[in-house]
Image (tube, rainbow, N blue to C red; front, side, top):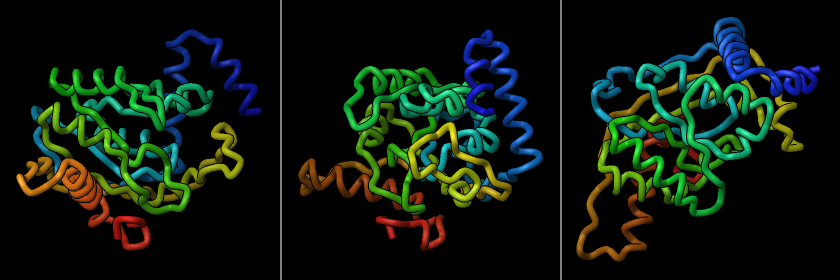
Length: 232
């Protein structure tokens, strides 16, 4: 039934799709799922341009984060397959997003992201690049380093728990078949930080690795130990 409705919606006007997506998410986040924000005092002033980063556990992560940082009007960086899937593609219509090709240097998307930041618009990135299939943090991708260096803005770390239980990843990889469960998603906001400068003693590889660890541990220190994964 869901597939039939999604196919029908795909043929509807853009305005109808956005209306349905908004109503659907409002129902989910008022009747089924509670999103709690902790550390709100750490969030920056709304006139500062920043990069938000967060661990990634589920396809509901983006909509859930939009509930708590939506006032910052962030543009979400999302994998192309989320747009291609009729279920996740529908809900992406409620917030701004940039598609990026996974596991490849998508220069066009990177240029667009940096351009947004330099124009004063906020961006939300999942630096792991994909949802964790193990329920804890996986190794971050280095694209965040290039973006942070070129945009020269501070980074706001967010740590999320519970979303992997709300919308678990389907074992067969079928995102349209994923089911929503009742529960609570918790988001912890950390203090904004800047990427450290490279020292003379560090090689480029050493600097990149240590800086990636620095960035990712800003998220992991706010998570319960079982969520920290490779960044324990």
